[in-house]
Image 1 (tube, rainbow, N blue to C red):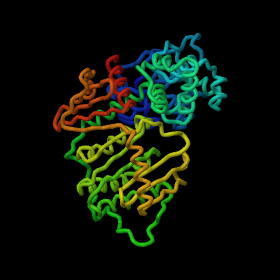
Image 2 (image 1 turned 30 degrees about the horizontal axis):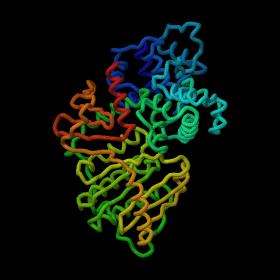
Image 3 (image 1 turned 180 degrees about the vertical axis):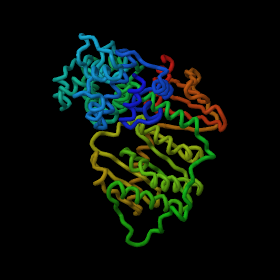
Image 4 (image 1 turned 180 degrees about the horizontal axis):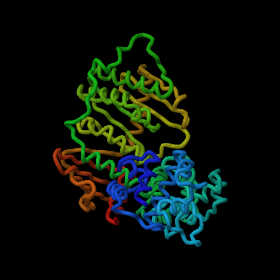
Amino acid sequence: MFTQRFNELLELLGLSGSSEPARVLGCDRSYISRLRSGDRVPAPGSRAGNRLLAAFFQYAEEVGALPQVADHCGVEQVTADSLIAWLWEGWQPPESAGNTAPGARKRDPVSGKLFGERLSALMDLAGLTNARLARLANVDASLLSRYRRGLRSPERGRRIVEVLANVLLDRICAKEGPEALCLLMGAEELGEREQTLAELMNWLFEDTGKESGLIEAFLSDLQRFDPHAIPPLLSPEQVLEPSPEEGCPSAYWGRKGLQQAVLRFLSEAIRAGEGELWLYSDQPMGWMTEEPEFVLRWRSLMVLCIRRGIRIRIIHNVDRGLKELLDAIRSWMPLYMSGMVESFYSPRPRGSRFSHTLFLFPGRAAISCTFPVGQEEKARYRYDTEPEELEAAAAFYAALLDEARPLFHVSPSLEPEPDARVFSPRSVPGVELAVGERSVTVTHLEPPHLSFTVTHPLMREAFAAYIERAEQE
C-alpha cells in the first residue's frame, strides 16, 4: 500500500520522474526509484520515514497544496499521524507519540544537521532566550521557537538569517570571545567580520537532505555533458540588436528592461570585436535563467563575444544559495570550456536591504542599478556611455575584484589537493569527487575528459556533506 500511495502523493504534488522528487524530498534519485518501484519501504516512524513526511509536508505547504493533500487522504487536516496512517494503512502511532507536526524532531547533541539545532547552539552560547533574541533582532519570538523545534526553517539568503547571524555573532564575540565560536563551528580561526558573518550564515545551513539531491542532479547533468552537443544557437543576424542611434534610452525599467539593456550591451561588444566584459550582480538570477527564449538569445550573444576574442570576468556572491550557484555553472559550462571566462566570488555578504547590478564593457558601455530587495520590477537600470560614468564604474568593479577570490577553474585535467578525500558515487558512474580543505574537484572520467575545481565554501561543504550522506546509505 505504501508504494501505491507514495506514487499517488508524488503525482498529486506534480513531482514526476526521479530527479524532481529527489530534489524536493532530499534523497538520491536511486532511492526515489526504489521507493517508487516498491524495492524499498521505510518503516513507519523510522528516521527515513519521518524525513519523507517532513519533506512532503514542507513542500505541500510551500506550494499551497495542503488542502488537496487532506482531501486526497480523506482527513480534515494534514498531520504527521494522518499521513502515517494513510501511507502505511493499518498502522497506528503509539499514543505517547502525540499529534506531532511534520518536521518536528527530537533534539540531539549539536551535530549540525538541522538549522534549528545550530540556531539553538548559538543562542545557548550567546546566553539568549527566544524572547531576548526576538527583541534584539526585531522578530517574532514564536517564529524563533518554531525554528528551534524544527517546525520551520528559513531559506538560505533570507534577510532574517543575516539579521539573526549579526546579532548572535556580536553577542557571542562580546560575551565568550571568538574562540568559543571557532570551537562550535569547527573552524581554526575567524577572519574579518564580513567573512565570519558569511561563514556563520553558511554554517547554519549544513546539508539536511535537499542539498544532496541538488548535488546528485548536478552530477547527473555533468555525466551527460557533451561539449560537442551544445544546443543550437541563433545566428548573428537573428540575435544582434540594431546599431544604436541618436536618442537611445539611457534607462531601462524592471526585469524586461534589464533584458533589453543586456541584449543591447552584448550586441555593442560584439560589434566592437575586442576588449573584456566585467559582470557583477547580486540580484536574483531569474531574469537570466527562467525564460527559454531570452536564455537562447543571451547565450548566443555570449558565444559570439567569445568567438570575437572578448574575455569575460564574472563575480558571484559568497551567500548565493546552492541551487543558484549550480544553475549558474550549468548555464555557463559551455562558455567555461572556452577558457575565455574568469569566475570569482566576493567573500562579503550581499546585504539584506539593497540589490546591485554592474555590467561593464570598459570604455564603451555600462549597466548599473541599485534597488531595494524585492523591488526588481520597479528598478531603474542606467545605461551609461559617457567617459566619466564609465571611469567611475570601472573603479567600483576594480574594488570588488580586489577582494574577490577565484571560484571556478575548468581544464581537461586538474590535480586535486594532496590530502583530498576521493569518492566515486555509485549512483553517478563515471564521475569522481575529490574534496579537500579548501576546494572540491569534480572529474568526468569518460571521454570527453573534464575536470573543474570550485573553491566556494558553500559548494565545498555541500559536496562534503553529499559524500558523508552517500556513505551512510
